[in-house]
Length: 147
Image 1: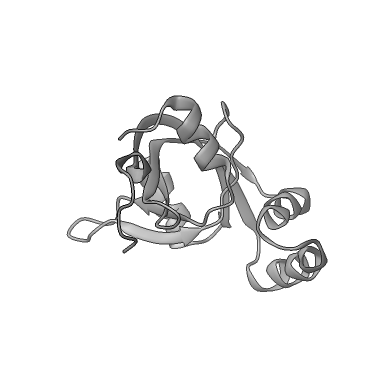
Image 2: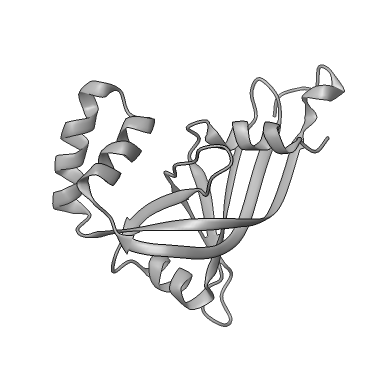
């Protein structure tokens, strides 16, 4: 069954690793890559990505992208949100700290930031303006086998 607005927003607010998809060059399938993201219910999801990355160049060209998060246990559930890429700005150390704190234990945040600044280079922060939502929760169907 489809999730309600509040259910899909709550699920997206959990620290899942998203699959980001964006239209690629002509003759190629969409680029789909795992990515950390940040989301607060009622707001706009945002991501950090390399300023010179293929991913960001494709997003700039397409003007839009999709984030999809899912889980298979304890029940099959997913949320996909698509929309325009908006408010592309230079990523900051505070953005990186906020993102890393969402996914890593406290003692790993600062070491990760140091590594990311050295290895990943300049980052761009961009927001997704949510326009289309697709969601499913099969938990209401009872004891389905976990795939």
